[in-house]
Amino acid sequence: MYNLSQLEKQQVGLRLPRYMIDEIDELTKQFSLNRTDIVTEAIKSYIADQKAKMFYESFDTSCKELKAVMNGDLPPTTLRELIDELDTDSNP
Image (cartoon, rainbow, N blue to C red; front, side):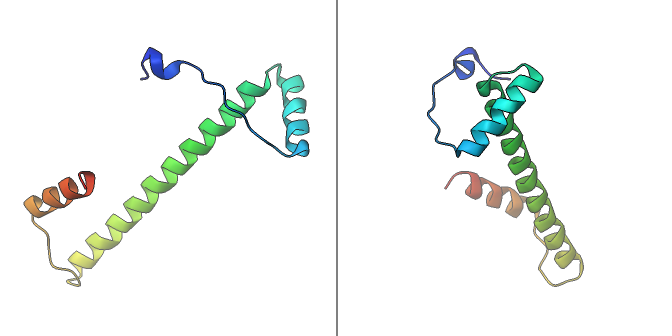
């Protein structure tokens, strides 16, 4: 999944409100973790949620476009046109 250099840890400084640090410290005691573990898991969870949100928004847009094509509101696209569009989107 990740190579060794990607797994290497790098120090990052954060400024958080005191109440958040207090809540994090409570979790460290409750689950025998350290602050780094908790913040890392929180960030992983946030990133996963955002990726899922982007996927479902993209899927929703695709479904709406397909419905518009099927209803005759948009002209049908050939596979070649779709591939060209995807190539253009990924290589600006």
